[in-house]
Every structure is written in C-alpha cells, then in structure tokens.
Image (cartoon, rainbow, N blue to C red; front, top):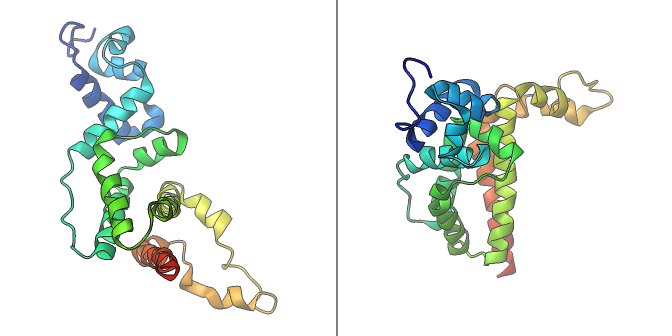
Amino acid sequence: MSDHGLSDQRLTREDIIDAALDIVTREGSTALSMRRVATAVGSAPMSIYRHVRGKDELLTLLMDRVFGSLPRPVLPQAPRDRLLALLLWQHGELAGRPWITEVLSRSDVAAPALLWLMEDLYAAWTACGLTLPEAARAHRVTWVFSFGDLVQRIHPAYTGKRLLVTGDVDPSEHPTLDALGDAWNPHGRHEHFAGDLTALVDALLSRGTARG
C-alpha cells in the first residue's frame, strides 16, 4: 500500500467510485481497470472486488453517481417543447462526458438514476399523441440519431473521411452534391444538432398525428 493509500479496512465503495471517476474523466473509459483503481486507492486488486463485483458494475455505479448528482432540468409545459427539452438535456449532458459515450458504444450498462428521464420521455411522447408502441419506435429513432452525433464528436476523423463527400466533387458530374456546399459542414455540423433533432421529432410526431 502507498503512503497516501487506504487500508483494506478503511476502503469504501465511495472511495472506489471517486478514484474510478477521476480515471475515466481524465483518460477515458478504456483506461479503467480494477487493477488501475486499486493502484489509485493504494490497495490490492482483490480488495476492490469486496466492494464491486467487476468493471460493468463499477461503470454502472459511475454513471449512477454522475446522473444522480445532476439537477433535473426545468421543463416547459407544452408536451412537444418538454420532449425536445428532455432530449436536448440528455444529449448535452452526454456530450460533456465522452467517456459515457465510449461505455455505451461497447455495452448495455444503464444507470438507475436515469429512470426518471426515460419515464418523462415516454410520457412526453404519449402526451404528444403517440401510442406506446409508436413512442418506443420514436425513442429508438431519436436515440440512434443522438448517439450517432455523440460518437462523431469523439471520433471526428471518422465523420470527415466516411460521411462527407462534398469537398472534392466534380460539379459537372455531381451538380447536386456540389450545390450542397456548406449545408453539410464537418466543422459546423454539431452546431445544427438542435435544429436537426427538432425536424426529426416533428416528423415522428406528424406520423402519429396522421394516424389519428
């Protein structure tokens, strides 16, 4: 044990979460391991397992700590506005913590502290006129859209090389792509997220309204 470490008797789950959160915040989720946490708290790796069953449980605890400590957003009354506010709040909080996007891209870890968000999102979709099956479909669509943007934020090179083809086109062969110009900009696309999300939500809601 290091001079500044904790003895096995004094080590708590909160100490482990504190150390793990520091690691993922500074270095990303791939840097996290039980051995790395043990080193950070100055304890033996087996001591960590007395408090946490494994890395997946630790990641769940980290996400629960983060989202459980966040103040809930002040929401508008109108169902559509409330829905958009919830979706943008979720995206904004995740965008500020890239390590969570890394975790979600590799596993199905979920934070119990976010159950209120899921409840409010589905309630907002149904308040806008969708049935529960339609709300489930709409939630899947908006989540995939939002998550795709989050992944592109942490892997910008992928966005530029694979998705954007408008930079070197021959206008005589591809006039539409040439005319597209700055409408799809690798450096400014994220600034358009809120507008793009709003258009997507309105399209999903219009399908439900048309059905009714």
